[in-house]
Image (cartoon, rainbow, N blue to C red; front, side, top):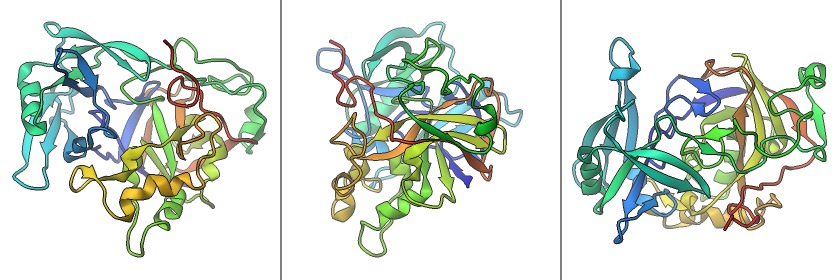
Length: 346
């Protein structure tokens, strides 16, 4: 197997950019989901904007522009608004804004709170004009959100090892079989939903596309992955992947399933809910992909992943070989409060 695509989302719920390689950190790819858009409510409060509810965010494209000297301090997030009718508009936002004079706001996402910075009016007014309602743009800055799901293998989760992990399985790792329990204090994330990385199996996409009429294919980017792995022998084998090792010496611990919502049904060309069979893809997957006991009504596609200990600062590249070094004997169970069947905190 190998990495066929890498997707980085500078702004949550906007369209990603696809570098040929990207640096990994324990919080995800560098610059991934460091910004998020929030809608201003009539009472002045702010509401998180997720693409499932705000389908028009699929018309917002985000790229990163580096200067010739590749200095991130002078780089920008290049936004392009591409409505189905009318001319596109673009805007540059500092990739690393100066937060000294910015107002601090509080953001809670999936019951996981953090502080962030409200970007200057010039950016929020541009976005508000595009979307047709008042919004603010939040920058995460030095903050991260706590992880609320288990990120370590539980002792009652039997595993089988590949050739590499059979040698190292008795050594403790950041998320290995010798550690059990809940998320650790250093397990932090950005504005990503539940984990630093989302890994998907391209072979499984063929199964999804087979549910559509002849000539139609499912767009894998609708699953919002970070890492797309190609070359797997069969569909859905990733349900049991526990640990991946790449030829660039990066280890990924795949800890829980990603369960899916109506965002899969969006027509990315129009920014509206899809029509026809492609607009029913969530229901089609519900027929046989509700395989996580922790979210019994939601279909599964992909695995949430955390970086191996000491691998921060390394890079992943398209073409890197991928080896499954550890598999679970049973599927994992999603336990993020409020996303699965576990009640959200009061």
